[in-house]
Image 1 (cartoon, rainbow, N blue to C red):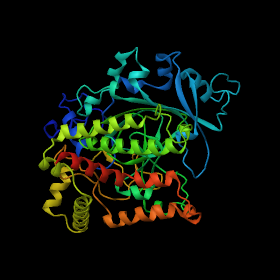
Image 2 (cartoon, rainbow, N blue to C red):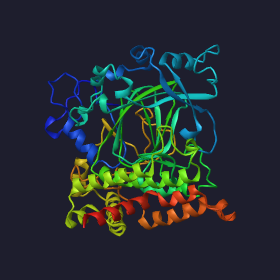
Image 3 (cartoon, rainbow, N blue to C red):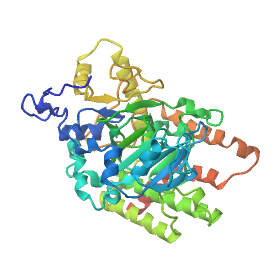
Length: 489
């Protein structure tokens, strides 16, 4: 169970706020929470960090009163068991108020209005990606109800947050965010998160179609995968967690995630935290945007709905994309400096990454072997440094619904956590490898080969097939490095 309301912890160690005895305190100071977030390389759930946030009362009913009469865009999806992902380009959209949503969600058969064409037993509704600055544009005082400063980010509140309101079954398809890491506060209902580590990217069959800046989608419906078409997915290590009200989930950089609402109404608030790696990621995204827009508009300039995510207002011209790319490169060089020394230090080749990752694998194997023997003094020190406990629970690999004493909060097969062994802000591009890099490299080739079986038999390569290779995350990373190195010499 979580720590009792009156629990007092050692403020000197960064755990607890140092309040007087008997008053409820938070298990981590803002400084300690930020240190954890900047160092941790696997998802984890924070407990007892938001018990005093005014936003904890933001149920859909409460928000319907705050936003009375305001039209909100809902994504309408089918409650189906198809093996194909239900991308946003395949969904319908309605403009409705939260009052109308709640009435429809009560399964009122006689309902009229925006939801009248959607049978509640067959469809779900999702008001997703709702930025506070747009949603509460005339109620900015409400921004203070979200207190991300408790996690070590002074001044960060609702202004830098997004709101998510969904019905049972509402979900986002599996994807990774190219920018930042993610903090998610669950307000109402429960959501089940399916997460996969960055090194499993080849097994997730990444694609940039549909295109959305900062999102790399998976071709797989991870809750009902087509293993004949995507056999490499068997190698992916699923991490599952059911997030309940009051809890805050930390999602590290580049972790894949599929998120589904498992209660009749869910409300979540999230904020993406900027990271040092975002400077290069913006260059990679600019390269991706230029290539996708150029090839897809050339293929069919009059049908952008088929490939452009509804979150993207419109495809941009080649001239605009060139300007965007140059701006991203300039911003990177201004941030890091343009000297050859800085460029060499800031950018590593794929081979250098491979060597580092292989060393990480050997290091991890050594730790695991040591753990199977009598605990040494070094292991004792490592144990003392671990942040996990009752108020910070790691999300570890597992594919079964949990049955833990914490009420089904997380999966655990006994695997140790993964954390960094460096400075707080020295975040590495990838988590430590649990497989040799060569396996992942082979998987990229096998993924492309298996995904092209039908196409090869017909000796036909589509624009999307080509783009899957050109804007594969590994490719755009290398292109960005070469582009920046060429401009920094």
